[in-house]
Image (cartoon, rainbow, N blue to C red; front, side, top):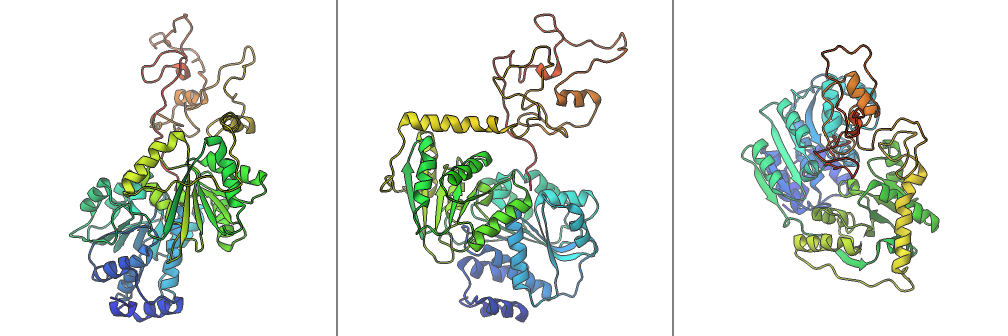
Length: 506
């Protein structure tokens, strides 16, 4: 298939493609569209930026045009699941573009915005629903959405879904769907857990893989620069002063790291914007819109933007922090060199990140060329770099309470006024029973649980004689719930921090 007209797509779809200037399909589209048009289940593997969205959107629109069935009230005919809000928005826009001459409705739902407006949009029923898993389950639980009428299920960026912890949400959603349906899975990589998921939810699927797993874009030139942690900010500012760098994506490992980079660029007189999970949806949309229209040429992001943000003209990608998951490197640098253009990916690597670099080279089966410092850049000494890094580490406490820290809670090392009741340690519980680090969410609410979350223990009034009294500590004082050792550990030498178990924000 060398032309879209060779597939036999519906005329309104071909008309929309012609108006958009699309003539020839990409390899993933050429192999995925025919079986999808026939109603077959499909598992497609292709690196980011190769046109996976059109590979499922075009055959879906074609199949809808063959039936006069209407969407049920508070239901949908096509359900597309996406891991991030930005990707969900882009998928919905693609359906609107390709289906502009068809009478089908589509809407997108995700967290971070008012749910009542989404409920009103779903009330009459929609033909195509693009959703993030968390908000989808919220709507189902509120009885504002039913999935009984779904004919086609699409899981886009399936591997990132599992990386973000959506596996339990996916299992619950699939149980709500009718058994007789078409399922399409698309992903950039194919780890074992994705293969197991595909075997469980796909029936006799067609497997399409147009590129080896975890290969990097052929047109992306890669470099790695070894630099101390404290030298990275100055190095980034020096590189971005080059007027040839038109539009650049900078990736950090953490949300606070992204904010620190933006503040450092602002001090250097370089305008930038950050996008990550702590930003509200309007903030994320404004930052992305400014990056798209060119009013902001530097966008600093966490891996939430590594996939799904399709912005034309990204000339450079800078890995300010190397990712600790090697697959993320492939998705990050895939944001440049899209649609046949060239691109450059520059990675900063400190001593601690050399192990991450080895993992990346092992996964991609190629060495990343080492580059020296750019001309005119004088790196800070080790001592200066250490002082810069230490000052940056102290900044969150100077700005105010950290995420999960209540107003009035003291930073570490600050003395408590005499006679003041001890407060809960960071990591006990957040409001609503959601653990901050380790531990499990509260199953129910009761006064004792609320008191423990607040970090205080209110003595019971009129305790019955048979009720057990609180255990006493080594010095004979009652042991408060907030001071109990974790994981069997002892006293004040430290505490174990478990994996973050709270549900991902969608």
